[in-house]
Image 1: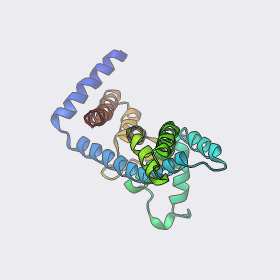
Image 2 (image 1 turned 180 degrees about the vertical axis):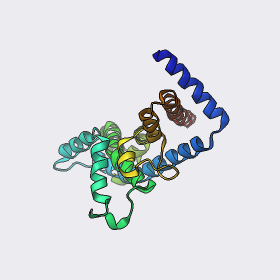
Image 3 (image 1 turned 135 degrees about the vertical axis):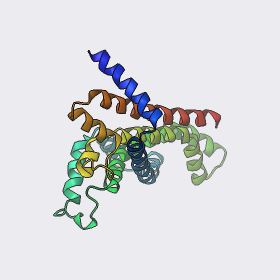
Image 4 (image 1 turned 60 degrees about the vertical axis):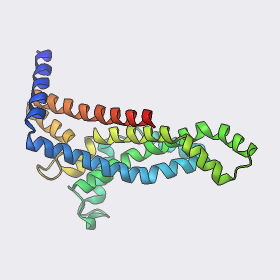
Length: 231
C-alpha cells in the first residue's frame, strides 16, 4: 500500500508540473522568494561575522563559536514561537504589523540560518588562515592583503555555507506556520501546503508536493555545483 501511495505521488507530481497548475506555481514562487530574501539578510550578517570570528583572535572566541554551533540545532517551532510572541499585537514589535506576512517568514528563516553561515564561514576561514597567513608574511603582505587572500581562498566553502543555509530555509516548516499561518494566496508556501494536505488525508498530493520541493533543492544545488566547477 505504501508503494502505491508513493507511486500515486510521483504521478501527481508529474501531472502538476506538466499542467503548470497556477496555484502550485504561485506557492512555489512565493517559497523561493521568501527563502531568497531570507538568505540575502542572513548572508549580509553571517558572512562578515563569520569572517571576522575566523580572522581574529580574541578572548571568548571558543565560547562564541560554541554558541553559534549550538544554535544550528534550534528547533524551528521554538524560534517561530519566540517570533510570534515578539510580533504579536501585544508583543514589543507588534507595532510593525509583520505577523502573518511573508516578511515575517523571511525574517524568521534568516534568523534560523545565520548560525549555519557564521559557523561554516568561520571554519572555512580558519582552515586556510594559518597556511596563508604564514605565506603572506613571508612575502611581506599587509594584514589587510592577507585577510583578503584568506577570504578569497575560502570563497568556495562560503558559497557552500550559503547554499546549505538556503536548503535549511527552503525546507523549513515551523516558522512558516507560526508567523505565516498558511494563509492561501498570502503566506502559503510549499512546506505549509504539504502539511495541510497531509492533515486533510491527501497523502498522494502531499508526496507530490514533497517531490517538487526536493526537485527544486536538487536543481538549485546542481546549478551551483556546475557554476563552481566552471569557475
